[in-house]
Length: 70
Image (tube, rainbow, N blue to C red):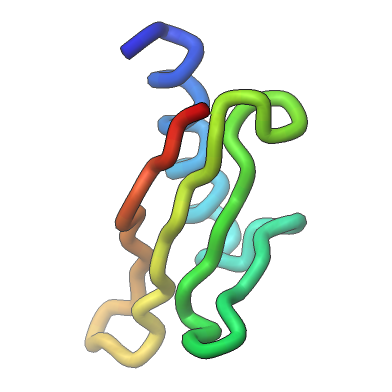
């Protein structure tokens, strides 16, 4: 994994955590609105990260479930 990809994933994690999963520009799944997708890198040049917002847990949190690199 390159430093650019690693940095993009860490940046995504920070944005997800600081916005409680509601990252500006992220898209929600029509069938499962808790599942979100966000672009990695400038304009999505590195890929897409998918994550799930677990709002009904005793301690609400988000989990990155998949990173698809281009």
